Image (tube, rainbow, N blue to C red; front, side):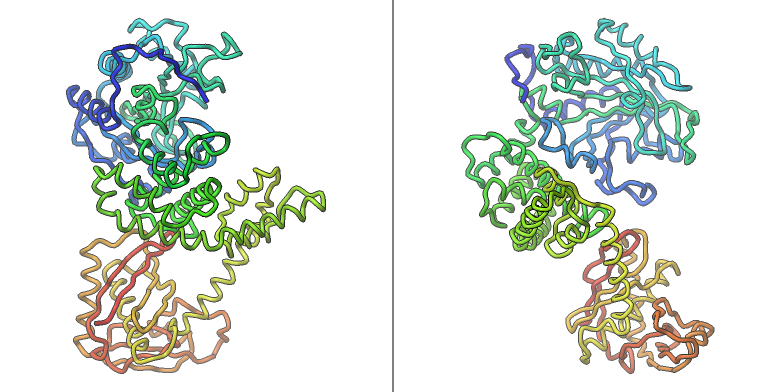
Length: 611
């Protein structure tokens, strides 16, 4: 832990996080920048290459590439971001977060390096009153066919920065891009000297030193290139500036704190953790756990507010991993921690960020999801840890250091331990996990699940009753209505029917709009009112296909020449199906969609009722 003494300039303001944001935006508005609306953490469909928005420039790619025109060539905003790469680093360093706020200003083909650098200097030194003697600056020193950024160095020198405080760095540090492809370019980074004192390395203690003396607070990226799909750099038609300044790190500096977790952006959350876990004094691993809990639950609340729900894959998997990792660390401090304790901490997050309307408006959803995840995981956590400890004891006796994939998968499938949690537990005890073997077990599980889904689709009914028969008939109308509204790319991927509702999974690559949902409902209800007769014919699968009967779920056990049931609903819907159906659509009643959501990449789910 770095100890910060009273080294700050007397003029420096003790600004709150909200004041820092307002000051940042107001400064650039005065410099003729337009404030743009903050984007969701979930990328828009056109940029589905990433799970989450990980940088402020992410939503602006179309502008930087010249695909779309912005409302102004000068833009600024505060963008919420999430980076999965930092999950395992949280708690180790005082400034590492998974979820954070990125303050940024952009020039889309307008001002260039010198003006961008002048504005950054002016804001830091003359507005925020940061001691320029505490600042260090890095520039791109060149690599391969990309020249050194002498222009940026010249700009800093022109502002009176000492030559020894400007450092040249390589491609890994000072050539920036948002991903493997897309807009990119050299950058100049601004660091703050937290201690003003060299560590044991003496003069070698500089930017990048592991002692943590210097913290990066702002990155100015000069977008000159586009990295194409072949990973080659191409010159862009015009140059742009993209900057990113971490709000939490600005708060650390401006509030004279030792850690981002001590700023007002975290203080109420940390206090809630200490209260719940009955902590009077922080020492040892408790400090690490507190940071993990605070970061992960803050991130979880914002992910849920943006529409992410726990799942076994992709975004939902990340959310589940965060919640469960937070729960484990709460119970490391307080072994008998209950769901109510996790909820109390989560509620402190919502309260601290209630000025974000989407967080406040979704507080009940946040509470419900975290409550459900907590109850599920806490009920199996102790049993899973017992199995893990037994496994470790057995391996020690055999003088082995690797947990096999079968055990790791059992912890995942039965006790809800994400692979990363098992790896973390193993690492704490000096063991490893056979990840390749785990992946093999996971694949076997998926194949069994797919086979089970095909079998279930023979009816999709939990039981056969007059109610489930009506719901099953309604799925045929829903399927065709979805194809009418969304296109023939829609294919049924599964269904589950009870006496109370139907659940219908289908292929589609984006969330349905309110208008689309209404159109689907209207079509289904129109066909119900028309009183269409449902007819069944027996024929081979080949004949059914020739007569345009949909057969997306061909059973692997089907033999050539074997007869199948082909159902038609008037002249509207034609499908091969094994389930029971109503005789006429007028028997169904009024159809209403109650929920539409994602269940996997490219697969949506509709829940509906008949009234």
